[in-house]
Image (cartoon, rainbow, N blue to C red; front, side, top):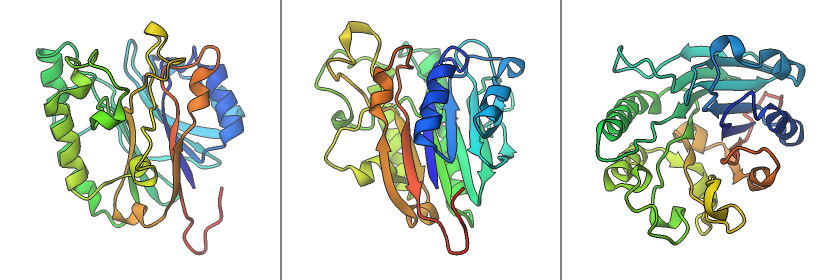
Length: 264
């Protein structure tokens, strides 16, 4: 079972790129972030034609999240992150697919920092940490996948000081990510590729894609039951180099099937 995450950076504008990648990579489940689409404008019909059912929580401007499933109907369990009923930003959706519980995350960017946007990022992270603790011991494989807007360590970013003041690399952001891992979650990409940077994001500016000046922002965290089934993980980095591409590349994990289940 192949589960991927992609910050699509406008689902309608990047739809041709998304459909091409789905046809080639054939992931079973995809978490999308930054839809930049209201609910009624989400391209459900085109995705259905490609063999994918979808659940989504849309929003104009910078937000919006979705979970796609190939040949299955995702069963929504949550449409927002608990802990703040007044938070109206569409940044979290959770669904069960083929026995796996999947949380799709678009964590706040937090810039400029310090300031209210960074405070919101850290408060949102605290809510995620609390919810993740409740999910970790769920009697099912759980994956928290998405754009975390955190570079976990200096190994996860090209050698530079140009990002030093950015919210993505601040000690407080990194500390929150470490606290998630300390609950027992496995960072699947880093676990399977301990000696490679495995960038997932390259800014459009300053020729950063051709220079491979990348950052690892997109993560798939697995609870113990999911980690036992982990077979492979990677980044489809060539997708970033295609015309009209998002500034993120898809990251993915492959889970071994349990006995008695066929691949979809």
